[in-house]
Length: 129
Image 1 (tube, rainbow, N blue to C red):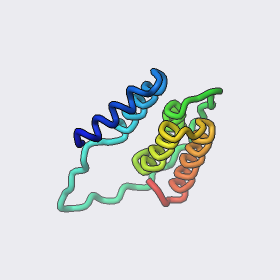
Image 2: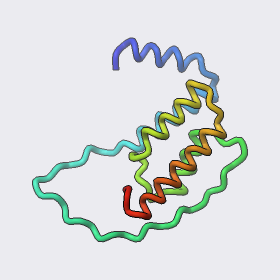
Image 3: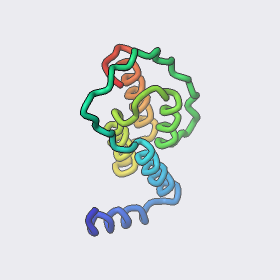
Image 4: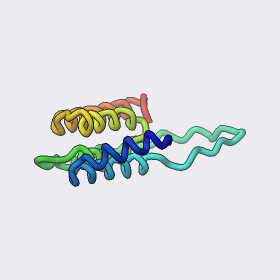
């Protein structure tokens, strides 16, 4: 990362309230938790795995006044069978809209719930991992 980018991030971070700084930190931790080790490429592709039974989501109630990052964690628990990396772009765009552009948390959380539900539907239909 360039020095200018680091300074800009630091400047923005310092202007946030303590609660928003915690949210940014939590989101950064969430992003890091989604990155795993780089896949090891072998000369021979692995044999296809047998189609596993896809579990049903475990409903975790949405608390009143839920924060966006907390909603992502809740939805990750609800839809533990989903590959969160496939939703990373959409979820980080929504968090950015909330944190940087002031989009209402409730609207962002509603959209996150739709994204997770759609990914689950695609997984059940065999169109996503």
